[in-house]
Image (tube, rainbow, N blue to C red; front, side, top):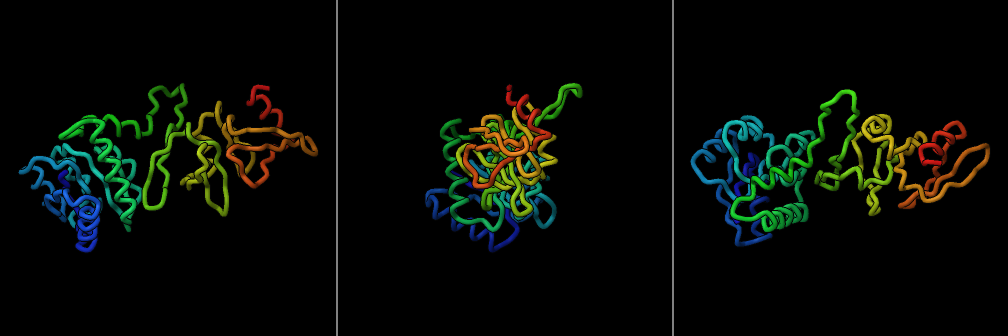
Length: 261
C-alpha cells in the first residue's frame, strides 16, 4: 500500500510517519508535502497513491484547494485540529476524519477501515466506489419545499474522531450538565452539537417525540408507560437510563396519540 502525507507541521508529520510504519512496515510513504502548491504539483506529476492523509489548514491555504485544482483519484483520511470541516471533507473521497492530537489507536482504526474497504471495493484504486459510499454521509437537501426533509444521520464526536451515525440507530436524546447526548440502541452515549430545540426541527415527528425539557424519545425506546400522580405519565426507556422520564398531564394526550393509543 502507498500513502501520501500532506502536513505542514514537522513534528505531526514525523509522528504520522512513525505510526504508519508501526501499523504496517510494508507501507510505502511516497512523500510528505507541506503546502497546497506542493501538493498540487505532486498530483500533476505522479500517479495517485492508494491513500492520502491530509491536514486541512496548511501554510498557504486549505488542502481542499488541491481538490479544486487537480483531480485527486484516491481516498482521503483528513487529519485536523478543527471539526467544522467535517461535512465538506466527506464530499471529497474521505473515508475518515481524525481530530488532532491524533493517537495511534485512532489512526490504526482508520487505516484498518480503509484496508477493509479496499478489499471490499477492489484494487488498485477504489476511489470511484468509495465516492459512492461517501455520498451516503451527505445531509439530504430538500427538493420540494412542501415536503419536509429530516436529517438522516449526524456526525458525532467519539474521542478524537467524528463518526457518522444513522438516525435509525438512535434511541433518544437527552441533556445533562448543559450538554446534549444521544443514546444509541447499542448503549453508546455520544455528544450532539445541537440543543433539543434544534433537534426537534431536524427529526421526523412520526418517530421522535419531545417528552419534556430534557428528553426527545424514539417510539421504539418506550419500554413501559406508568400512570403517575396528577395525570402525568412515567416512562421506562430502553436502553435503560437512571433518570426518571415524565410526560406532563398537558402533553399526555398528545403522547398517547403519537404512540397510536
